[in-house]
Image (tube, rainbow, N blue to C red; front, top):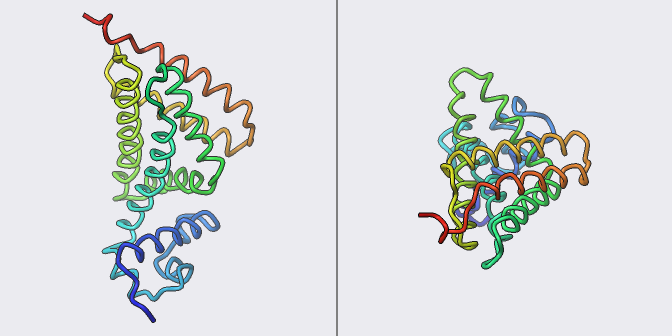
Length: 202
């Protein structure tokens, strides 16, 4: 049997963990369950990851990376800031809809980390990664649109995460695309109102 490169091995295990958690919950995602889903040996898991917690952190990075990639791909040079924000938010929602179980897993991971002694930092790290992605998006979007933010970008990033978190939870519950789109329209209006044309700022 050919040797699997370490990067591919880790990716396969992360994908297997996503499927196990989506189907049975975080508590069922033991290393044995994950390797069984991945059709690997237990030794393969320990070769790829030092612990289950390390793998969970990589899983979070994988999903957040997918969300961010989708949002960044929606940015278009020369677009006004409202269009840039709205397009990025739509790309995020499209990502949620295309892989809803990814987002369900992320929501469950937060609750699991918060109620598991010793894992509280994982929930905080998850939301920090959301805010970091939003911050990078805001900086790039502002540069492309020729605007500056009138309040700290970190605060606006937190606002975006609040919107996207709420939209995700609501859509997972009711699958109402039209309602989610209306919320994103309001979010784009609210966020773009916090920008000014660069030349007008003294």
